[in-house]
Length: 416
Image (cartoon, rainbow, N blue to C red; front, side, top):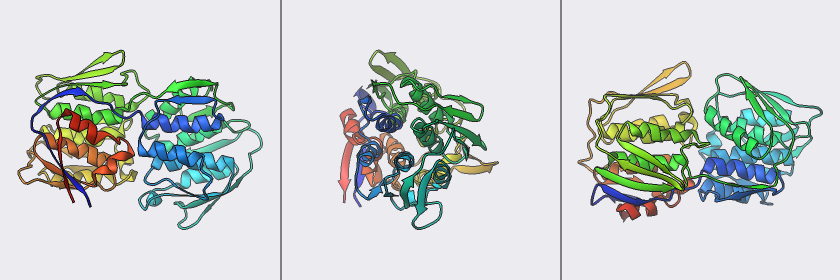
């Protein structure tokens, strides 16, 4: 397996970094565009692997459609293909085949989809065999405590059902910011959906003919903020970001302000600057609306020796890997011991600030086929050299990450 050894000859960062466009927005717009028959045009689509794959699979005539590691890709694709009814087989990587699809599949069956599990009940691969639209206005009960992507997928295809769709959400709603993102995109394209309490109403209708530009990705930007927080000085421009964003991860700008990273918004993006700033005695945050930046903050806070307590991490166990356990395992290699606690369905992650990060022996960080592990742990290289296994896993969300980092001065040694 190829590895990258990362190091920085200096700790003062200056430049312009182009982050990927939002994968979350791009993937939703791809589904809505397909449902509109192409009336909805997309400008500045993300180049993330998940988005590139979803775009290809939406128009593929192949019998077997492989979503790779993409959780969003398979869930959105399953909903779309189910209501189209054209026979196909949906599958993915070994890890993706371990992630549950039963709540979405059962909802799709209630809407008239003929689906068959080909191996293990409730998991990929699954065959689409046909679709018969339901009579009248369908109403579904669906658990909202596993994945917001199930909810978003149903919301989008609801626009293509003859009488629309009403969803009644059961249990605690996780990652509500992503459901809100889907709702706002529906409003942008002229569909008057609404969400009240635990009821979501989707009227039938197609997108107006228009073009929407995808904003830059705040999840990807979190790594640039994290790098700035660990640098001695930094002045970095990130084009395409908006503080008033559809993305819940935009909260990273507020989190990083506590660490001395200031954000100035320009007409074409943001400028971030590392200022001399007293670090907080401790840090507490709820990541329920922004789980994708939890790894970034855990690594940065540990490196700065700031005690922290994170909650709202329940969805991290069912991502590309169990991200809670992966964080604990990999930070232990740098002398940091995190503690996970489980409380009524929530997961808390804590660091007491007693241990100082130790990179005196160059650590080799595993990435678990998880792009966010590679991206987050690469940040420690500005303190001392580190080695990242399977570095090209970053292509899932930020394909040009290593090139952009080298433009700031990162040095990479390839280890075969």
